[in-house]
Length: 299
Image (cartoon, rainbow, N blue to C red):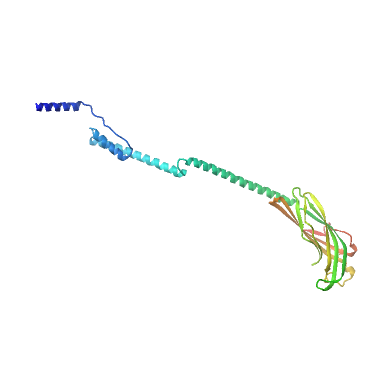
């Protein structure tokens, strides 16, 4: 009985094992990491009745290929993400910051270009005004000189040295013309001098003035000399008639300054005047016309 019972049980057990459907293998995949895949493989092999070495080898090769593919894709994605981070200069707002930087850079470029263009145009305009101003150089003409009186007498200088002393009174007429149509001029001058060679016998100072555009004025300058020691300069010992015919030189330097565009653009005009005249006693009180070319030089 025991033998049959066991045989029956064995038969029933064998029949039960044979008839019962095979269990399907259960796989648990929780993480793409290689270590977790190995754990899953162990669990699946332990729970499956078909965990043969051949099946285990096939699963190991499949897991290795999947792991290698996942690792390479993970590395590539991580490398790309870090490259974008460093190129963008930050985290997720790198694109927006880059766009703002580009817009700010464009604004700066526009401002710099505008400033440079403005300065170039202003410099060009100023240069044109400055260059065109020389076509409107003021004209200065010494029209006449009149020797009104002349007196030579014996005397002494400031140190008590006896010598001839000269007193002279004369009037010089000057015409000043500003032909410019767009600027006025400020006029100054050095003193006007009358020389007998190197000896100065009379002088005068012209007052400063402002001359408007397209206008002119007549200047009257009184040139005087009072008790000028001659030290034999006019040929002492010669006859009185010879002394009263004396060659003189009249010199004057006139400066005209035009402020064309305020003090930023200005032009200076210089007129160096030299007139040669002869003082004659017989012509005292008679104006001498100096407008002819052989009297005066304008440098």
